[in-house]
Image (spheres, helix red, strand yellow):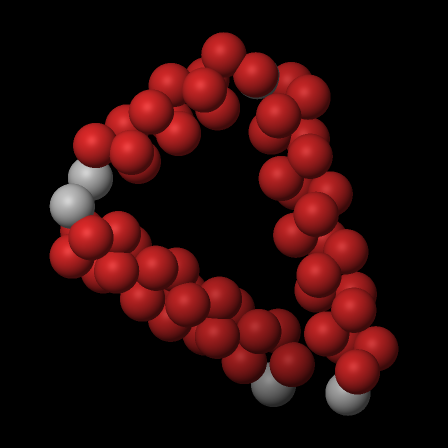
Length: 62
């Protein structure tokens, strides 16, 4: 089980690193937009991302 967690963490790091490497200007704009969002909007976006991630992992493993 721990190996799945480490693999998932590694994949997340690769994807995030690719975004910064391939489009640094776009990431700077994205982060500035996040800075302007309200805490409730960020919380909702985080919950949606968690739900999508759990659903994707469940779908892949079943």
